Length: 133
Ligand code: SF4
Ligand code: SF4
Image (cartoon, rainbow, N blue to C red; front, side, top):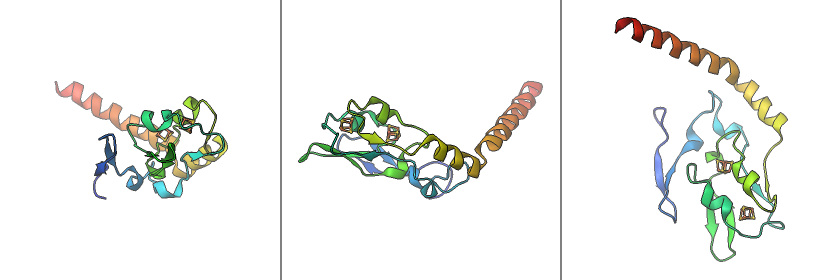
């Protein structure tokens, strides 16, 4: 993967574009070193499809039409910190790591300091732009 934009790697059964977010570092930390992704408790899942249908940006899920169940097909495409599908699941069948783990990865990546630095750079660039007008 080159550059800072994810490559398009295909389309899913709904025609949604699939991008390779798994190759994109997260605040400089390799995405594959951050096991933030959904796990399905199939004993609880009722096969409603809400998780599959609502994860349209990252396209983490495929759908098993025989068993009528979601498949976590691209786990590392999941957006670190997102748990929308788990919140929406009517059966609490989607499990994510604990918040403490997420914050540990945040600190390992130095995300807070990097975010602040990025904003300071943007502010400086904005200031230069305003003066040049
Ligand atoms: S939202 Fe929950 S119950 Fe519905 S298909 Fe997904 S995991 Fe199963
Ligand atoms: S947490 Fe968000 S990005 Fe990850 S699988 Fe669920 S809806 Fe998709």
